[in-house]
Amino acid sequence: MSLEESRIEAILEKVQKAPRYTGGEMNTRVKPWDQAALHYGFCFPDTYEVGMSHLGMKILYGLVNAQPWAVCERFFMPWTDMMELMKQEQVPLFSVESRKPLSDFDMIGFTLQYEMSYTNILAMMELGHVHILAKDRERDEPIVVAGGPCAFNPEPLADFIDAFMIGDGEESTLEVCQTILEWKESGEPRMDCLKRLSRIPGVYVPALYHVTYHDDGTIECFEPTEPDVPSTVCKRIVTDLDQAYYPDEIPVPYTEIVHDRIMLEIMRGCTRGCRFCQAGMLYRPVRERSIERLLTLAGNLEKSTGYEDISLSSLSSGDYSCLAELIRELFAKFKKEHVSISLPSLRIDSVLKESLEETQQERKTSLTFAPEAGTQRLRDVINKGVTEQDLIEKVTDAFEGGWSSVKLYFMIGLPGETYEDLDGIVDLAAKVVRCYFEVPKQKRAKGLRVTVSASSFVPKPFTPFQWEPQDTQEVLREKQEYLKERLKKVKGVTFNYHESRVSYMEACFARGDRRLGSVLLRAYQLGCVLDGWSELFQFDSWIQAFEECGLDPEFYAFRRREKQEILPWDMIDAGVTKAYLWHEYEKSRLAVVTPDCRKGCNGCGIQRWKGVCSYATLGRV
Image (tube, rainbow, N blue to C red):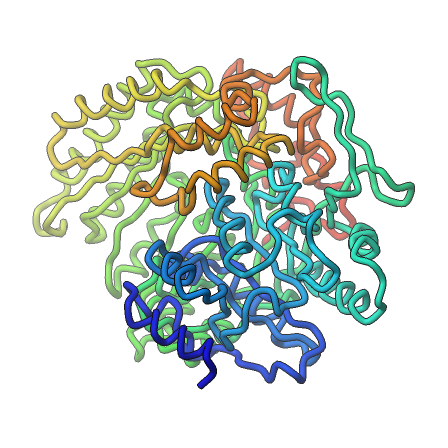
């Protein structure tokens, strides 16, 4: 055993949840290091149990390792006890598979799922002995790339990331890997690698762009610094999910994780057009996997993992065009194995009754519905496109089908919200409880549980509400207390809400520019890490970092943007046009609903992409 191995073993004996770091899980890929020309460190900037629940990691991990010339190994953000011991014992951040230090890899890739994970990226690089600032890295240091939904506004991380991959990663990841391998063997300077990467469709290299600002802090100009660098970076789209890579086996953890089950991605994208929902805009167009392909994947994954639960994953699983047929086929296939099927992300206007009757054959979990707003007026403002009657009918179906646990998701602080809308949340919760007691006793299950969760609205890029301000801290806290007091009086209801100060910081970085890089670095130096965990979030340190850097967080979170303003993410083409988003914004102010794209094209701009089908004809399997 090497000295470093002995140090690792010594600290693993002292930490909580050692299986976060030990590796050796079933279905992991430990490829011979020397036989691979390219070494890719996939970094998830949160703890093992969160990262191992992420489907994108499993897809890219399998995809890269399927290449004979490449090896992909996993890195996760250590918990505080592990970080302290690693620093004390001078043990660098190491991979789960071979325990190689992060700095030994040719490229490292971060997935950007949540703005409050950004300081974890800095922590992981420092722990891995990689320079935090991109400008400080030598030629032999890893090329640092990033992708995921937050990459659609890459600017707050522009100081730290060499290249961002925008959009679907199944194709662009391999192109980036091959480009870095070619550069590695060429002997060219590091900047030449960045120029090569910038020529790959869907790749944004922040070092090759220059930004100037007006005196009021808004952007004056954004332009490339090299003649062959694109002024606009268009996202990548995988047009055929049946042909796209999907793993037949996935690592099975030894310890509990957030989503410990098979995740079967049945479709990608959403046609509903909710005006607050970034994912619904970013992941357009809708693409469905065929039933035949899904049954094959489910069979292979069940055999290779032994899991007894399959989650049908998508933004809105109830919109899959052949959902009931798929569930019937899955139950028939796994009848002897007693595999349960779970349906996350259900819309309350989906045709669910038949599907619910099928899923009740096995274990029942909570059903989750997202009305988002308490009144029809506000649901029309946000283009939710569902009614109170939809909710009551579907909840009644669920209670009659033997469910007793229902979760209702709402958002507070939405544009145009009033206290009447908050009263509507209380009223809806009470009606759901009443639905349960109206079901005959012999039909309903015991133990009613209705959970009302209220998150704070965060304006996000590439949504019609990207121009809207966030409610101030005081207003959000007043609304939370208002709901808390009134929901106390509704028997059988539990109320959960998110810390508004976290949402405040999230809003700053969701719509931030590259000047926020200095704030991120200073906040990290002040001890801000693992900010997505409420017990570790240090709001005062974040405010101190803003003050020391001479920036005002209210400029980013509470300011309404103007129509003509250059937004920090305007160099990215996400498919939907800025004109379409502004038109939707104007319709929201009139509470005018835009119909589902499957009923006819609404002209969002995604139809410009070659190979993208019309929503009106897409999805018939």
